[in-house]
Amino acid sequence: MKLKNKVVLITGSTHGIGASMTVAFAKQGAKVLVNGRHEEMPEELKSELEAAGATYHYLQADLAQSDLKAFAEEAWDVYGQIDVLINNAGIGRDKMFIGMREHDYDEVMNLDLKVPFFLTKAILKKMNKQRSGVIINMSSVVGLHGNAGQANYAAAKAGLVGLTKSVAREAALRSIRVNAIAPGMIDTEMTQKLSERVKENILQQIPLKRWGEPSEIAQTAIFLAQNDYITGQTVVVDGGMTI
Ligand code: NAD
Image (cartoon, rainbow, N blue to C red; front, side, top):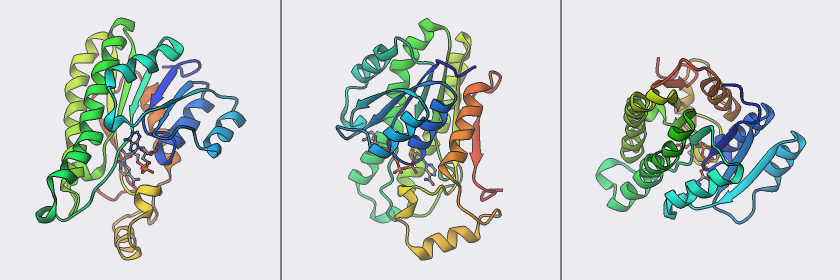
């Protein structure tokens, strides 16, 4: 897929990996639909998009509490099409399994799995009519290998891998591709919260001896959007952490 003038919707895209993907797709000439919970887009992201000469539109929505069918309609109508959907918004509520409450499970499963499930459903219906499209789900190495203190997050991210493979098989009938990315440790607000001891411990497990940059996940998303013969895959981007 050539990205010039294609429309890309990225959920949770005002910060971190989502913001980096937004700028990267805009630099390829795509029109980007930015989503965040606050009334206004952060100034920093606005300036970056404007410096890139981007065509963009901001959709304010807390997806954990939104009518996803209505959100999909609103997003689609901005430019009359969506060519790439990236289910990126995600949260963690880490606790050891024994102490994990139903609320910790529900919050994570809702935003990290249920929202991608139903947003994909709403957008795919429209992509089917368009007979083209690409969907990318943001999973995690934790969904492939598990992690102490993240049973809820691992379950949601593993669920995304199954969702990706199943929808890929169905959507291929209309040449629509569905893939996932499983990042390792990427330097964003989500991971900056970890204690220095935990960070040091994780670093020891990464053969490339550094954390990943959000731009390295953005490059992967662009590759998956452009390569017309990859579907149903989960691409691991983790500096060798899970070799
Ligand atoms: P981040 O916390 O920096 O950003 C998450 C984004 O989601 C933010 O823009 C936030 O505003 C948005 N968001 C949160 N709740 C939302 C809601 N209810 N509605 C709409 N948007 C909401 O996290 P990140 O590191 O950039 O993570 C992006 C994705 O990548 C997530 O799905 C995360 O699970 C996944 N991931 C991250 C890492 C990592 O190391 N950073 C590793 C593996 C997977």
